[in-house]
Length: 249
Image 1 (cartoon, helix red, strand yellow):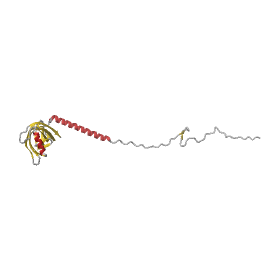
Image 2 (spheres, one colour; image 1 turned 90 degrees about the vertical axis):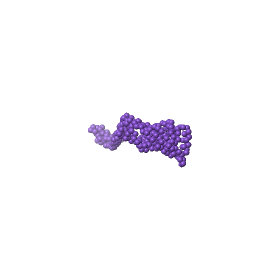
Image 3 (spheres, one colour; image 1 turned 180 degrees about the vertical axis):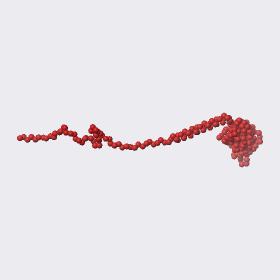
Image 4 (spheres, rainbow, N blue to C red; image 1 turned 30 degrees about the horizontal axis):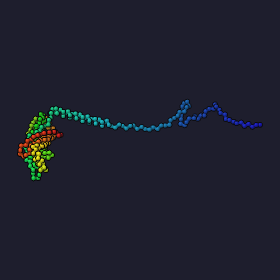
């Protein structure tokens, strides 16, 4: 008897029911139909900070705009006022002329200073029809040769009405250092018959517009003269005269 060894193989039952444990990942869910539904892991919420409020520039901008507008308006009003005053009063600078120049004394002192005494006659003409001029205290008149001041005097304080001509006589005196050098230069220049002199005016004045007295201003002037002689107590002829004046606020 031949021993036949039988091999036993397991029989697979096709109709057996499926295992009860579903093959779905851990943490997932199933739908009504049995299909798995994947669940997303919980998300971390990061708080969002609100943007910073805009700077309060609108108030500053409004203030600047109002200030600039106010300045512009004031400038326009000021310009219009000045224009109206100019059209109403038609201001003109006063005019001056040198009528005569007389040397009372011109000598060299023992201390080698040059002493000079001049008598000057001036005509001041106010051509304005509606403007008066107050000549205040502190006005000065001086005579110069090159860069050396020979003498100086004070202008009188007075009021000059509109369209008025006033004659002034001013006495000028002074002492100058390095008198011998200056005297030699004057004598040498006198031989030519043409001696250049500068007459300078510094006059603080106040203008009267109608009944309103304005603030003080300064009249600065210079007259370039050419005389024939500097001999004391002699008639001096003014050969040339060129005067220029201006206002200084």
